[in-house]
Image 1 (cartoon, rainbow, N blue to C red):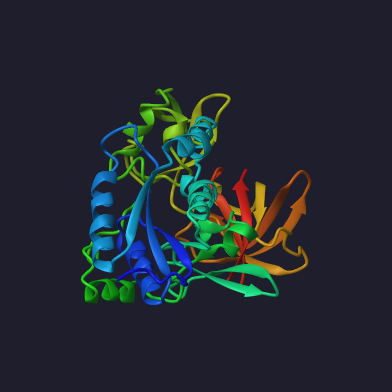
Image 2: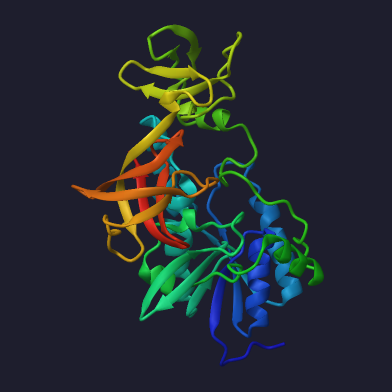
Length: 355
């Protein structure tokens, strides 16, 4: 069937997964002229499953009846995301490249490309919702709390949101899979991808070693007792329990801190050790969706990692765009380099990088 010349053109970012497949299907059913766009963001090795993902996109597009274009953003990804990823790990922090990929690639490079194709909007398979009120756009949590991805989208700004659709925002994941199954989409039972595209399912430390050589040092308790050796501070994150190699009796060991000056990893015993609990944090490199900071006189909620319950907090603006966040109850394993994201009920206000 020929596209309706009057239909609004929407370019859907299609990854080869069930979510973006159903996003494209729903928009086609709503009468949009839909074009699928497959982004290749990594090409340094053969382990990233991009080839199979692209074949899945083509198979889905064939069923839906839409055109697909493949675009290579690998250079932009390397410059805007991967370089930052390595710098942060080298500095002993734990970055979240998926957040930067959204703001710099999916909602910038991809958005610019789509507008160049004559699209009025882009769409993705993210679980989030949008609300417009008097010309201002608000990013809201998804209906499915278990799948809500607003945490990863907190760095988007008004222009990006004004050009975006989130077709899955009101749907539970189970219904998305059922829609895909009933439509005979070949991705209906495909397993959700986990981790970062360029690392995939492989061993994270082995990947990182290719770019950041080992720098072994001591593992110590907070009082300076030597308990083991580490392979390099960049390979560990706050709260990490697996892969420390510390045997013996008693409670399990966790990473509690990094002494960069001495190249020492601080480890403690017990999940609820005081060094793993923080009542406050500082954040920098702030980004606010409404382009204004939250009101420090009000109570909010925050997440310091994606898979976490909202935690009641107070926000205070500091100098040189930074802020402090104080929590009603201590938070576990607050990690420098990760993001703290502030919420007003179900509205994502923005956030910053934990320093």
